[in-house]
Image (cartoon, rainbow, N blue to C red; front, side, top):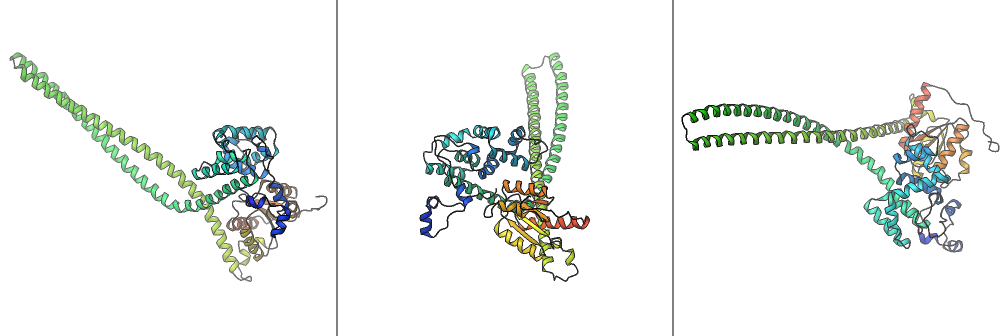
Length: 456
């Protein structure tokens, strides 16, 4: 989720006029922040999706609609292929359609209203901002975020401070997800151990089930043989008794004894059958559990390999930077490719950007940073890109408008650009290491771009 164009200020501070700000010594908000803080007119109807601030569309669509739903709707209004397009392209196109308005935005609005009709009716009971925020806090506690987020953003009493609070709460949830990824890596070892234990348990249960099946078959065969023997014995006894005019009570006693034995045999057969069915059911459940654990392990392994590659690249860069400049291995350093190179970094976080600047300067390169329009003017972005050797941007910390601008300018001037997985230093160093390896295999440089600030 990218940073909003407004500062998350308290509502009481947003109501101060210019003269009151001057009296308190506070600076007035930047033009971009002031423009984003203008709320919709107070009407008796809910807000439309296209009427909301364009910087809210990314969070609404990414939170309230799944990629499966967007793949059905977005290709109807764009040229994207619903099977070949990536999740990022589908999400990006949906945000652009919401910003442009028109029939596509109406379709998105209708889809959201149909999905969250219950939440919309529940939020309609709110008669002021305080009641609206109480309903939002209840939704945060229960974890039912998507319905409440859409109902709040389009509510008729949702002012800009209310939307700022909801956006900020949702933004902090994204940080919690990033922290959870590190806990997933720690659980990977435990999952692998559990998976091995489950495999051994399934093998033991399958062997036990085979033993029970063999015992059941042997017991059934023995009982059937016993029944046949008792039947033959009864056939011999009854005619002899009939010829000898045997006592009817004794004949009845033999018959009852035979019936009791047959009943016991039927009960034993039923018992072994129920045990076999229960064992087969347990085996199926264990197999499903093992399959789910295997999928979870594969996902965790994929993430672990990616994080390990980034950590390895960061460690190599740190070790290479600590070595003397006149060392014989300095030219083979992972960041040696940055020497005399100009890198433009769009987006990111202030702390990470400062560390990246020091790292690139220590490698003999030049790093130009543009935050995508939060503090820097967006008009400076197109002027900063020409003449760069490479342009990078973190996909988790840049807005769609800046991404479109840098892609368009880079393609026009044949500048190489690369997306980063995160805004961390490790992702940047891993990308520079890959570019360094590619440059050693194919040592070719693209021609410099001839760019004019006046004529383009």
